[in-house]
Length: 403
Image 1 (cartoon, rainbow, N blue to C red):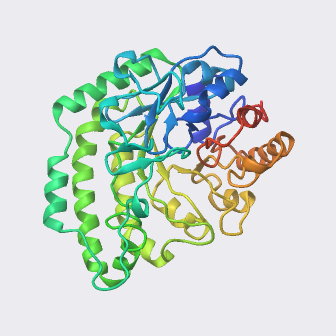
Image 2 (spheres, helix red, strand yellow; image 1 turned 180 degrees about the horizontal axis):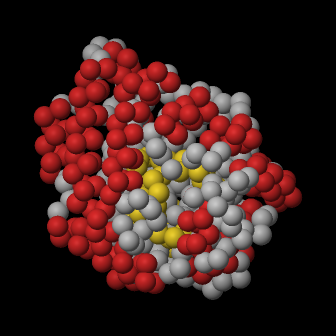
Image 3 (cartoon, rainbow, N blue to C red; image 1 turned 45 degrees about the horizontal axis):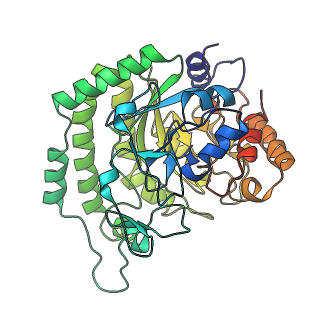
């Protein structure tokens, strides 16, 4: 099977020659820029520039030779045309992060400044010496200890959505990129960004604010979400007919509904305020592009809303954080088998991956692959990104745990 055939078959619950695999098909299945050259060396590959494409999380965009060496089946296309499906050397410029990542490249080196003690600043985010990611105060979210909760101004939301509608020129450029990627690779093509709905339980003020607003004023949230859906539909109807023949998977959001132990809000909140809009959004994508699969990224202990995620028409759920919430990979698989594909979940990335031996990592990965891959509907990947602290030999061992 070609890599694309393998992905498409798995996502349609059909047999494959082996489990499909992913590294860096989207921004939560990637690898830290701080360990990327170590991975290349471990694989016996020559040095190439470390292309830091997600500068908040400090993720490296994997080169095709890394995907070849690990048997990975997916390439990414982002809404601004960034891809690893073919070379885009003209987009990249040297920036070595105080010498910490030799031969590193970024897309906009002029946006970084260095403070006296060595802290690197990017907008309102900073990366002090010794840190491996950028961060901002309170993770960029509002901290409200008393008084009225802030809420988005609907007129401003509408104006912003109107302003950011996709233009013909942007759509034409994206179509050209997607078409070139399709012609350049046999891998499946994952489009991240333009087809998202824009709903998030920790959006519009953050996790300490928005779930409470959902409880206090559901009518307001319905109005907000209906507005997001209206403009998302406009973009879908403009974009998808132009690119549907060149992509295999599209994102519908990054909406982390779970924490380590439970949901961020109640199942009833999801059913009332999120499910109807996600259902309409997925249905429109499937109407416009029947063979394209929809992908929702949602971290944490989601077990108690898995049936509702199926009901939304979501084709693929990631990252499959089965260790969260006291459930098992088997329980997750049984709840969605044959109805929604799972993407990730190969190993406990917070415990086994950083503290386990290579043998323990491979043992857990093989068991996860056996369970989650049963009856197809599964793409093998780590639960989340490989952080800077993860030894390259562990990354290689994970991917080589299965054939």
